[in-house]
Length: 301
Length: 301
Image (tube, rainbow over all chains, first blue to last red; front, side, top):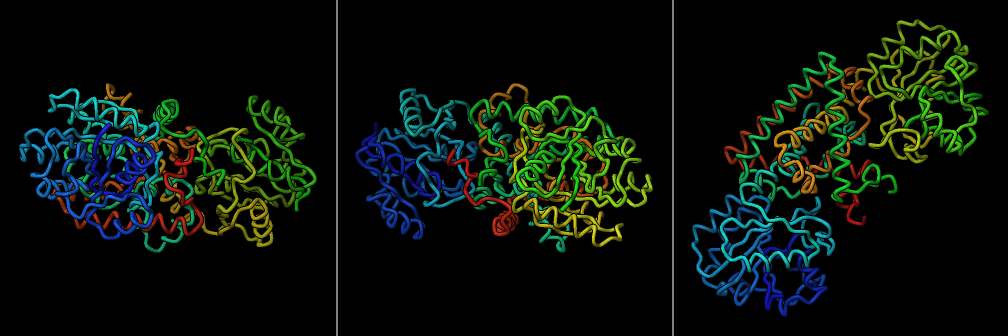
């Protein structure tokens, strides 16, 4: 599919891509660069890649597909190093969760004969680092490809096939639509999860042990995503702050309505909310985006 | 342990208790009453109980332990039917999630020679009804027993042994402390989960399909508890509204701080929040209250 693929950043997402490429020959060479010594050590130890580049320039040289799997705040630095070494006609993509700001970074570089096409696989776990990756991460999940500024349909088609090869289903949309939808389905839940866990532990320091003990009543569900990679999430919240704040305002209005409903014992209103949210879960399961087993299958653990 | 045990209400919790009692002889008789014809049909079909009482009076008659496993708003009605039929010296307990209001209901009945000792097993799934119950539901979970108004230490001790027998660890605390802690660990997360799912689906009706599709980015975690039994949760929110509103106010303040931090690009503040919440999950796993497998073990599904 590609002569040479380069992965910059080999954490949960990068190493999952690497694992799939290793398992199935879709390029003659796959080269990895990661600036962290610990990550490089792990890649060597787990025998994940024999072409570990020493620097970004040599990593991207002659590469037909370059995948940035790094925090959003690192794009500029990586592009500064790579800019003169990209192969003519190369596709540059990424796996980041917000597109508008990094899109601007790319535009400022004003690349010629290099095709920047943002991607975002909606997949992941609360773990990070190369040991956390696994080859089924993208299976049955969606990857969004943003197509707005790219005129080369055949390059988009090629990238789409690549993601499908990794096990993903692919949807094309604009950068604006992506950043808005992800604010709802991912950034809002993460913002709320961090704040709910913070509220629970800070309200009463003296009850901290109790809160851990009785977390099975609901809180523990939120702690999973509130334990996601802090650096990655710092960047996401800052890059998509405009959308997130708009949605948090809407959310706060709903919370105020809810407070009113419970104070006034407005049982009809409460039942209406709870029934509609129950239906959403049914639809998510029907769409194959979550498992049906109760309690996320913890029952069997 | 008891000559006769009565379970009023045979949903997820009641039927789980029933399953354990059936599996291990701890009483000569176990009688069940449920006012729902569907529930009674299921109990018969699944062969869960041979002593199905026709009414509440006969259900509680001669019973040494009566367990109310019904919505909080039904306690009064059940007690009105049962009040003259309780055995002298019987323990009446429950499995409800809020204690202050139902405690008042009990006090108004002014029972003599009947021991009301509230219990609350911190266990459950998003499923409801007798088919959803299972005998390991309480294993390694905590049950809170409220002891404030009960002078008979030996009755509390007996109830404690009963819950331990069901697989639970037991903690004694006051009604006020229970309602406060549960507001943090269970009612706040549920209130937020319902509202976050509501916000996601209502903000843009035209994006509803997209929101289902890309829910694996975080939202789906919240839909699990937002699909819990609507009637049960309506009652919980109304009975514990005072505590919940206080905590929601605190939560809203944290959300406002968070908005300020992302607008101001206050990276230090964000990292500080995310690191502290990451630690909470570690402690919950260490305490045996959640599984360590990434993505709640969905990885393997």
